[in-house]
Image (cartoon, rainbow, N blue to C red; front, side, top):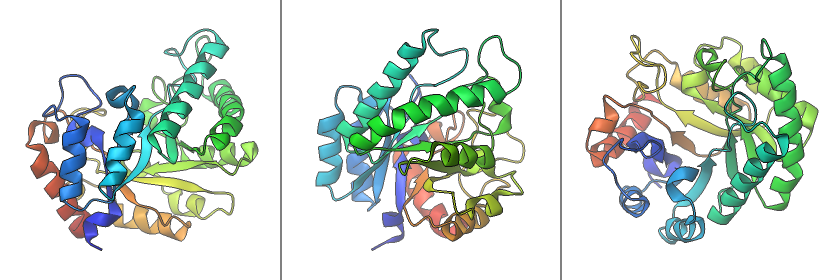
Amino acid sequence: MTAASGLALNTATLGHNLDGAGAGWSPEQTIDACAERGLGGLVFWRREIAGREVALGERVRATGMAVVGLCRAPYLVGHETPREPQAVMDGFMASIDAAAALGAPVLTIVAGGIEPDTKGPATSLRRLEERVAKGADYAAARGVRLALEPLNPVYGANRSCLTSVRDAIDICARIGAPNVGVAVDVYHVWWDTDLARQLQRPDCRIEGVHLCDWLHDTTDTLLDRGMMGDGVADIVGIRRAARDGGYTGISEVEIFSARTWWQRDPGLVLDTMIERFVSAC
């Protein structure tokens, strides 16, 4: 066992979730590079592996690594969702199928923003809860757990009406399904002074911990995340709070960094994230 075995790469860290970003490594190159460094697993994005889920999942497992999760379900609420509710659910079910085919135990859910013709998050959160509840049984039958990921409040309008771990746990508790929990991303929760208390609630089920940092002078709230140790987040404290809340799984590095890390050699990025996992997490 090495330090790297407790770490998973979210491929967004190499720019793979956006066209034209990063070094352009294929999923196969990424898998092999992670295996060479002894990482414990990978998290893919649907858009980069569509139609190849089975083969890529098998390739990961053949190296001794695990497929840790899949990013992400389509937005379930907000202006970017289809107008027809059934179309929203069809997309959701298709993402669950993709996770199952990949062999990913967890599908991350980013909610989506505020519903058209509504104000504030209340209506959108109710619809989010209804749609996750409808998908929970289908996901369970496919062997997939669902992880609600609250985003930083800066994204409340357009990317996620769900902006606090408290609200995410409340939704999970009301749904009451054993395969629905929360994902804790440093970038989105570092500011939350109530985080540790929320994660120790008896009804909290943590399905993932995502590592990165919030830079002191961030230039882009979406695409300027920091490498662990380069910013102001108490990563050690957040990981401790997750452990105290019962999380024993792998830690996942997810860094969107268009001007910095996506411009660097991906091998260097992998080596740096392993070193920072030891020194700053």
